[in-house]
Image (cartoon, rainbow, N blue to C red):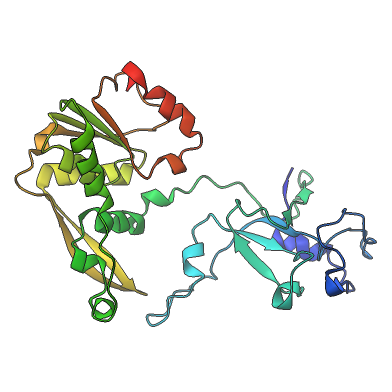
Length: 306
């Protein structure tokens, strides 16, 4: 079994359904058979709950954003937003139309449901097929974003035209602030591990105090960048300004930092190798919320195991 496809949802429609929920008479979803079936024998095609589809939201062939207008749809061409159809009991305006089609990530559950389907062998109703996992952290855009956050200067992160009219609040830079807190409160200064190190800024800052620093991240691309910075001390990247306009920037490691104290590895914070233990401090910054089960990581790193 699988979810319905967008094409199959169109096949369920009979073109004669004109149901309404005037005055929100129904204040919630109702049973599938609450309203009569349509002429094709299908219940609940429109107006009760949005129905998840197999189809990912994607552009038409040749579609590109205009240089002057960064269309809000573009970030959703990521293989993680799926089509929902049919509207819900509380949909109004254009979302109450038969033409309504929207896209969300699967975490959207409000007013949404599923209709399962199965293709007969040798006579598939569509070309639906399962696709592999798409990891957004392995894209160049995401790498550039993290390099800017970790290594960009203040004037590079804030638009100078906006800064001339808006006073940006003075906030600590997360990668540096994490390192400073660890230096301040950790008793031992021998070994430290940064789980979810991304492109490594915190690890480099810790190398000014700790004898051995280990940086672990799930992303191959992030670790490649961190290892490049460790080896060469610099790394070029680009900042996305607007549309297709970009600015070339360079990440530069402070030359006074002993880069030989650092080791970067690809790893899963929920499945760490046994040799990673006996650290004076463990850093988990901006990573627990991304783990499928944070307790596994926390239990693994407590006591002598961490």
